[in-house]
Amino acid sequence: MKNNIIFKYSILLFSLLLINCSKDKDNTPANGEITVVVDKSFQNVTEALAERYMAFYPNSKINVNFAKEDEAFNDLLNNKARVIIMSRELTNNEKEFYTSKVDLPFEPARFAGDAIVFVVSKNSSKNSITLDEIKRELLSSNRKIIFDGANTGNFSFVAQKFNLKPQDIKFSVIKGNKQIINQIDKYPSNIGVIGFNTISNPYSKEAAILREKMKILSVIDNKGISYEPNIETIRNMKYPFTRILYFLTNEGNFGLGNGFIRFSCTQVGQIVVSKEGLQPYNIFKREVQMR
Image (cartoon, rainbow, N blue to C red):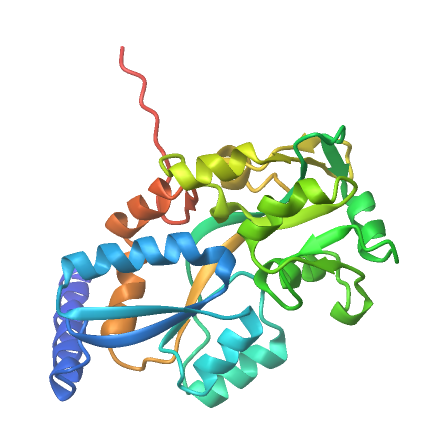
């Protein structure tokens, strides 16, 4: 009986989706054009997902634009973007504003485990950093911490992690994650903050070159345990600056935006996430011992 009810409900839901799609033939999961706005530190995985999706659906076009997270959120609310990617948690006020402005329930579609990475010059004697040390430097007038800009995804996530007001943080700026890596040798006493996705792809020659240009610091938590940012510590969320990337949309029907989100969160999209060197949120590596 229960299975029969579920089957009937599935048929009804599918019929409703077909009706919605037929109302807008130019906006279906396989057709149309949308803009996805993301922070630069999520560029690699977003472009990889978009390229794979368009290969499956040649009549679809996904434009990937870049903006700071706060700007991306405003673009979504003002219908300048169909889909955005966020890493920081929205405040309760932001969630309420989203539901009232977009007229949709707040349902983040989580799809990847990423991280914030602290890097130094290749010649630095420094190999690790404590949480307390990071917080002290964020409040120090020495401005040794280098971000890719104010209110970027990296900046906002670190500020939220330490429950600090953005205006209280003292920092230096080099615009762009890659530029921080390329210039970190010029500032041997400074610490750069980048997104893991910038260097995570194990198959990318560009990522390999970037990894060779700097040293990644392990982070020591409040229990004195040191963690390096890698797939294992991101998967089990033991690395202190693990962050979960998620989609938000203002699309009320099952169009190209929701099609792209569903694709990214299901098996094929999650394989793309894995190949980008990030931890898929919805599938995990399974090891089977044969006897």
